[in-house]
Image (cartoon, rainbow, N blue to C red; front, side, top):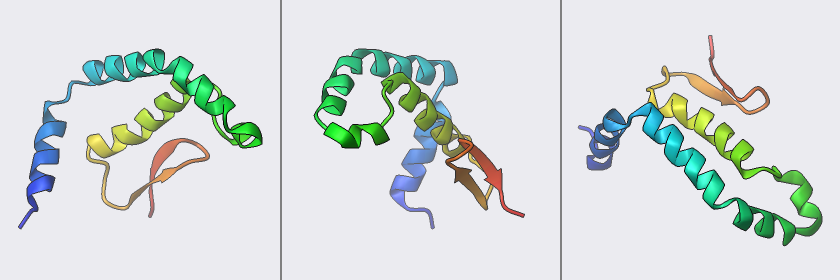
Length: 89
């Protein structure tokens, strides 16, 4: 029996419109760009490990989420180095 939150997540994912999601993600990156710069600046040398451009980072997070929201096949895994989903055979 599916858990209540599984059913709700699937219902919400089914209502998502790709263009709308892209617009919202882009708007978030634009609105929070200054905050990202300030936060990154407070990290000192550790900032070298964090993306400079928030839009770049958000785009890659969205690429990962796309696979999840589109119902990636069982056994698929995210390959961070290439930023793609792959199926293990």
